[in-house]
Length: 404
Image 1 (tube, helix red, strand yellow):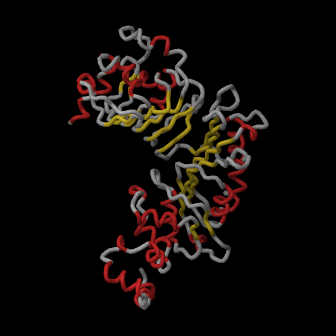
Image 2 (tube, helix red, strand yellow):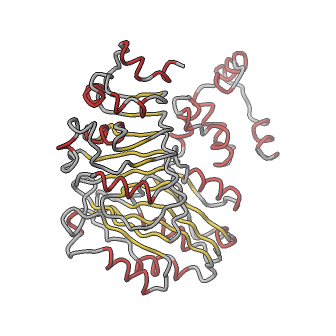
């Protein structure tokens, strides 16, 4: 807090009976009523308040809830470069991004002109791509730009963001740019797909603007577009090598490259994920630690041999040597089988497991007696399900690490 702010607070007159009562009883900020905290907010900068009270990992705390409610709109005017960078890191937080309803930046301030390096990363979709563009256009002296964003607006039809948009919306306004690392995903409604869009179409737009070390992907379900939720398609463009540790909405159709930095992956499609697909995932994501599967379709090829082939090796065994967290709670039971059956997959470091219902786990493990699924469960320390677990003797023996 600056000296001027301190003097302003020191000079406040606390003459009303209510203020006198507060002075007699207050021992910490937590004892102040909301009205008084909002009054203090008036004398603090945006970054002062966020640094002091923004605790998204403990979002139930009263001070965090107040700061969150207070910043439905964040004004970027008047921030120093250091403050602006701090705010942008809150937007980019992997687990708890700051998501105000709106951002305000007037043309009266040009502090963004001094930025040489800027990074914006978010695992949650932005609704207003145009607002991001307006922000980036103010950074005409940026030399290094990193973007990892997804765009989806359910209230209006948007076009797929391809190389042409990147050039016209961003690169034309950054003449000093030397390094551009990016991942841009557009979620498109079926109404926006008035033509047969292909990955090659998008790739050509990137090549046309001189971006050579890039690629693109569109998840296919019928040879044209893959709807990751049945109602939208995920169309992505990104620079190579892919330098982010988080990637979502990979489907059956993804490029045959190695994502050396990715440790957290969300895969999603309306076409089943077969055994061969998971082999490709293991090869392409060698450092994978956290895998989330979203697919409600049964494996067409593998389900025929699910419980009848424990002693008959029909697959090459896949190994995920670093996988510690597996989330299958919004997926078909076949994917529980895929990852727990050691004749299909080996996960030697698996410690956290999320499944929809206990009966799915019971079915795959044959009431916690099946040998082929025992080894992959041995190190699991945490199981999450919608319904409660019944800690039977067989269950306890099957998951010994739960009780250490």
